[in-house]
Image 1 (cartoon, rainbow, N blue to C red):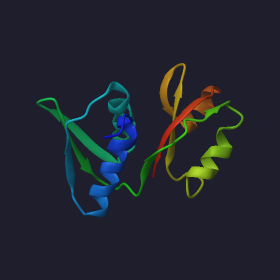
Image 2 (image 1 turned 180 degrees about the horizontal axis):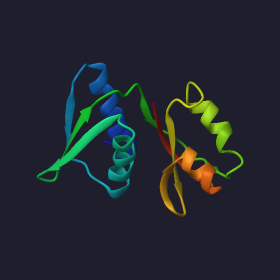
Image 3 (image 1 turned 180 degrees about the vertical axis):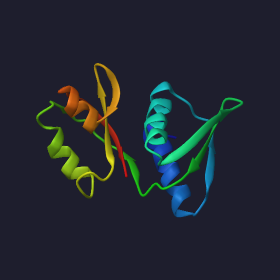
Image 4 (image 1 turned 135 degrees about the vertical axis):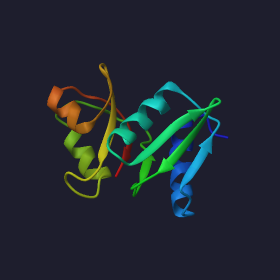
Amino acid sequence: MSRDIISDVLNEIMNAKKAKKEFIVLDKSANLLLRILDLMKQYGYLDYEILDEKIKINIKQLNECKAIKPRYSVGNKNVEKYVRRFLPARNFGYVIISTSKGLMTHQEAQENKIGGSLIAYFY
């Protein structure tokens, strides 16, 4: 069992997708994880609900999601370099960045001209 809940959950989601499962039920929970799931839900990649301290995740149109290790710290001018590294095409998918204003996608971070720490990506 790893200590990185984000990486574990994103790997479980990808394993379920590869096994052609429609949903998974997790017994792990963290505020950072819920915020990441909120961003993925906001953009229509998955849906989730909390039932009796467990999280039920319905996988929709997700191609891939992974945690970024190590957690690179980037300035607002260097975000594009990492977007090109982790995403397959321009305007296809999102990199999640932890900033001083909370978690946000790379597009929101560039609009606000702030940098932060890279957490995960999905498309």
